[in-house]
Length: 300
Image 1: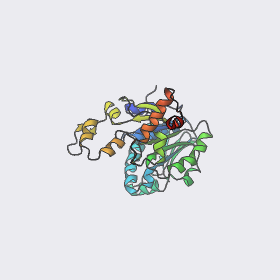
Image 2 (image 1 turned 90 degrees about the horizontal axis):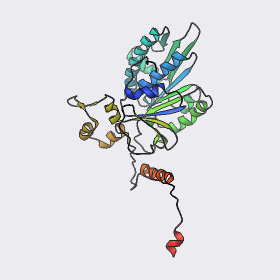
Image 3 (image 1 turned 90 degrees about the vertical axis):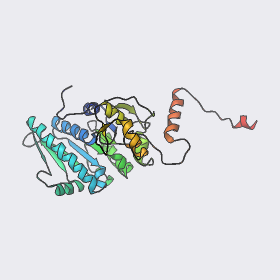
Image 4 (image 1 turned 180 degrees about the vertical axis):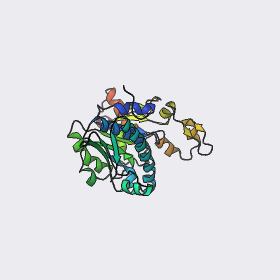
């Protein structure tokens, strides 16, 4: 396996090189490098194949200026590293935000006009484009698709319905989506990415599973990232903490379990969670359990 152009963390390596899967989901803890890894993979695709189009959708566009400015920091870092990598490969990279100040960059990003091109020769280039995550915009494009923080896109079901036909229609197109479990268990992504089990072994490379909806998911929680050399820092002292130490002092345990532990938490009042029910049904299928009508026996 050749060295990537950008330094990757242990859990980023396999998804970066995996090209066999048409639709791949990253379920990673917050701040584990989802955006950076997807941008890195897009760069590799653009450098390897002339003429391709990579489409980026980000919930940041719909979540206000605070999120857009955070995304600005990610893209500034990414574009700087990518420019050096492309130059070393004898190619040229240009973007629609070259030379812009922060406010102007955010305006371009917010209105879906952020575009990056890699020129292979004087007439041929590959490009990536950031668009707003809405069905009306998405339906007009065809190419590889990257969706960031899809668990916070309100109309995600409609967006997915709009883009899946062009992904399914071309054997070369790929889709990669990244998010933590959504805050609302009614969100469409909740049922699409729900794992078949509750517990996973700690693995610095992350764990793979097939969701109950049939999606291939790569999972990296706080324990996996910590094993891979990525600690969490105390808010007061800024000293590195283990996941258990960080959770013990975290004021909102449910938020920690969702954002760091990747737990699928229900918000209803049911005595038994949906995750537990679906897991029980899956075990029943595995062990050949069958249901029978005992109404007549009870009546007797």
